[in-house]
Length: 186
Image (cartoon, rainbow, N blue to C red; front, side):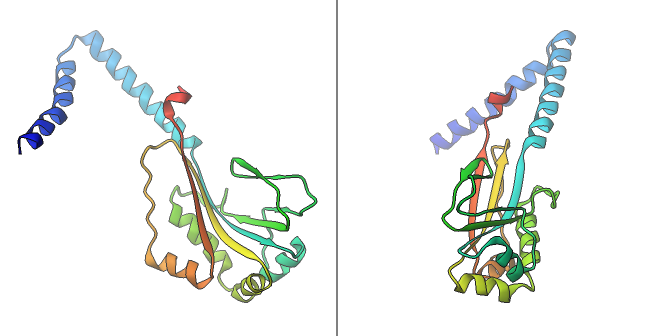
């Protein structure tokens, strides 16, 4: 028990320091208020630089046009084996088969992983026969979620219904989450 009490005292100590700062001179209080406003603007700027999207990735021996026919969707990016490497998020990639990508990037405004996932799943809905054909003829199908965040805490909550749709469509879920150090951007 004494250890718990010591920890509580340590947690309260910084709050006491803030209280002392409130009793400082008007000039100091004004400087603190300006620092807080500057900090708030910096946080908003960094949040605006955050990025989040979900993409349906298909790697298949078929040419891109055949994948388009199977799904009835127009991809955001394609790469044939003979093409130069393409950018996927912050990475460059080269594939032995056709790479086909259809993304929520620029189409979903919410900064919520499940909203992006559900948007991609909604686009695939009704196209299950084409998706199954691609899976059964040597294709790799995956939903890839990419997030770059300036927040040190980001929640990843997926409802059972979303997970059930991923399983129903036999889609692998890949997550890449980058947390940037806000101090590096100051």
